[in-house]
Image 1 (cartoon, one colour):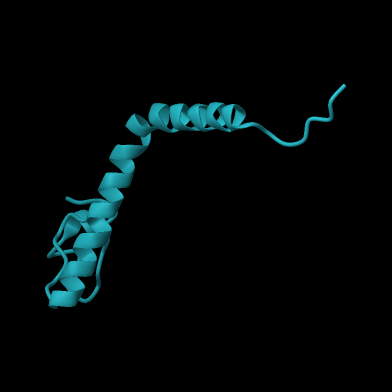
Image 2 (spheres, rainbow, N blue to C red):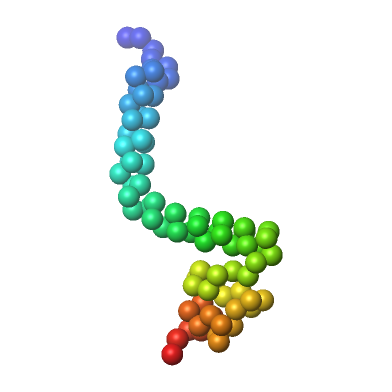
Length: 80
């Protein structure tokens, strides 16, 4: 019997193939949430750099620019 040490290139490629398949199957579920969170983050960063107030409806209440009257969607638990 030979003493086999470590994996061969084929075993590494099979493992890589399984990982790629798992990632591709998970993409449709992860992409919408990731895309939305990234958009909010980068829009807020761009507004901060430019000194603009953050838009109403971005999901985060910024007390410097928004309040219950200006942006009920973000700052009030229940909009009336």
